[in-house]
Structures are given as structure tokens and as C-alpha cells.
Image 1 (cartoon, one colour):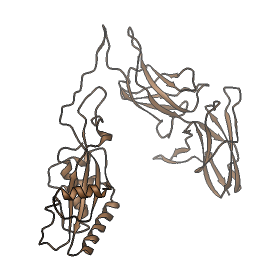
Image 2 (cartoon, rainbow, N blue to C red):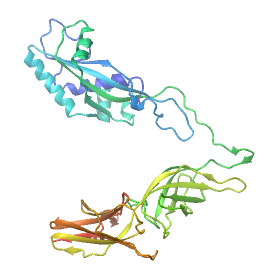
Image 3 (cartoon, rainbow, N blue to C red):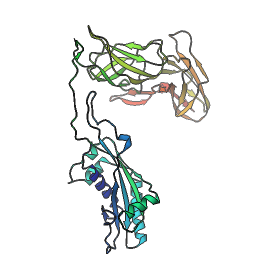
Length: 393
């Protein structure tokens, strides 16, 4: 996060950028920007307003861990007025055009640019804040422009306004980091409750699949005994016991249950201790994609191409299904799910006017895609799996 020197750091960075339009870039109030005797080209960068950003007004301090508290950052949006001067109006207009072109092509301030422009100045830590600084044009009505110039009792010059946001100045209030709770009522409990941060796909996979070890990320996970996978289409959650791991990461396999469906689940961890009630963590989302096999020919002539795949988990009634061939998407012409719960679902889709090339097949069920990537070699390199590719000639 940045500190109180951040506003000055932004202004100096903009000044450094605008030197490409003219070497003479000043940062003065409107009534003092131009000496009446001056005749050279000049660009004046004037910060005339610094309102707070409503979008970040009540955001939490960056880096807070669960249970900690701290003052929110001061979020500022900086409004600048750019005015140009010259020996004649044509020169002033040329400098204005160059300045606007520079800012048009430079919508984000780079972290290294901020450091370089403020070398030798007080450290602002502006380059370390998580939000990038964005430069956008700021339209001003004729009334607003008139009031701005008349307030300085000086003659109006053609000007343009820009907004730089968001500058996050860290609060100077001390953060509070309470110790872990050791007791709930009269019963002693060793350690804190499990907190889930995310459920990630298995290593070298784009999405979780049934039977594969998904990664559970969070804190106090060492004592977790059960993981529940809930889905709106399931009457009861799928249950699995976590595998090896530590307090911050453990692996858990999505059960290869006959009732499993593809889509997005809510996952929570349960901690069971002797003599105390079971404690449930917060819930986090996780996508579960299908595992597919292309059963139609993998080499076909150009034109209308029919693609048939079978998949697990099976497709439930009412699920949204699409087949993707390369970047093209098509609704299935048939979806067959046999009564036998151990059997596969089979999906067929037809794609018209497909030209020669190699196309990767994916199956999308309720927004969750199958994983078309495999890894080969040492070190392992990702590539599209030929088993799910169709060659059109």
C-alpha cells in the first residue's frame, strides 16, 4: 500500500510522461502557471481535485488475515487539468495534441515508471499498491470549466482534464491481530477452526474431476476430518475424507459417486473432535468438469462434422450442455443417459462448414468444461491431448 507521499508521486510520474510533449512541464495553479513575459512552449499540469473513490471507500485493508481488523485505506481519485501555452496558438495546440496522445496510449502507470520518476524523492510505496493506476479522460461541462477558471481570476485557455485512480493510502491506525480462540464455552479446544480460502484443481489440471485429488487451501486444515461437496441438483452432499497435507494445504478427492454431476459446487470442511460438536468451515466454490472420450472418428473430411463424446459424471436431466469444436460451440442434437448408473452419458453435436485443420473437442456442462490438456516430457510441457482432437482434411 502507499503512504501520504502518493499524491505527489502520481503528479511527478505524469510530469515525466508529458516531457515527451515539451520539456517545459510545470505544476502550478492556473493563475500562476504563465508568466506574462514568457513566450516559449509550456505545458501545465494542475491537480484541482482529489475526491474519495466510492467503490473503495469501505474496503478492507490489504493483507488482513481472518480474524484481524484494521483501518480501511484512503481511496483517492485525482483530477488533473492540462493546459498548454506557446508563442502562438498553433504551437500551444500542437503541444496539447501531443500530450493527449501520450495519455491516450498510456492508460496504466507502470510500477517501474513510478519508481524511476520519483528517484531521490520521499518513498511513497505507490508502486507496491495492489490496484494499478489508470489514466482516463474526464469530461468537464462548459459550466464546470468556467467556474474553475473564474475562481482563479485568470483568462481561459483551452484545456483538457484527466482522472487518475485509484490511489490507496494505507491507514496509519494499528492493526489488531487477536490470538486463536482456545475455548468454546466450558470445553477446551486445541487449535483454531478450519478456514477455506479456495478449492483448486489438481496440479497440472485446468479443472477438478471425479477421483482426482483437488487442492484444499486455507488455514487450520490439519484437523479436518470430512469434506462436503454440495450441489443444487444433489439431495445430499458428496462426502470425502481429506488425504495427506498440512494446516495450509490438503488434498481431497471428489468422490466418484454415481450421483455426482458436473457444474459448480460449494465445498466446506468439517472438523470433528472428541467431546465437542462438529465445527464446519466457511464454503468456497469449486468447478467439477466432465472426463470425456471422443467416440466419433478422429479424422473426417471437411464440411459438416458430427462429434460424439461420452462422459463421466453422467449428465442429469435439465443440465445445460454444449459441445465445443475448436472455438465453435454447438448445442447437442442428442444426449443419451442410460438407466444403468455405472454407464456413461453420450452426447452428439453437428458443426456445419468446418474447414481443414486440427480441432480440439471440449464438453461444457452447466458452465464447467472438460480439460483438453495433457503434459508430456521432462520437464513436463502442456499440449492439447490428441485423444480429444479431430483432424479435418
